Image (tube, rainbow, N blue to C red):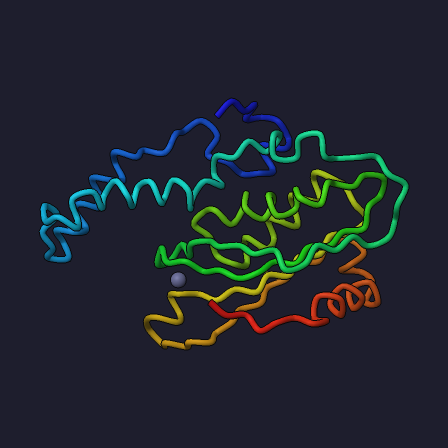
Length: 212
Ligand SMILES: [Zn+2]
């Protein structure tokens, strides 16, 4: 990754800036897990499993090593517009850091520009930046809001994330329909109830039930 690690954007993105992922190390560890389970890592179906898992992790955990400058590249514009911009129903998937099992759902993002707006397609990329990591949903929600705050210095940012957590659905309490909602409100969204309500009304309109 060719990134200036001290750039404010890189700092806000909270990256593993210098380190590459240790693919060989992950492969070795997965093989040990297979042995620990009691499996035979040499049997046909499992022979390439360590490589496949490592490759999957590389993709699912790619958010630590995204170039935050390239991510918003040439998509921040000076515009005189001070109304709310809302991007809703952004699909995401992440991995819970407690069990390393997926959680997934959708994110809704809004901001009120001061003098800058960002290309709409970049907002889902910002969600990816923070979801493709080992996460807890609360922190992911805050990080998305804080990052947009750094990039655009808007009058306000709001992020609501709805997630279904495999670790809750499949194990332990086995709540098959446990949907978790988290939110982060900054600036006007925090200070002004009517602004916050406008956003919350918008994202609840026609919302479909979250499911896998
Ligand atoms: Zn978990």
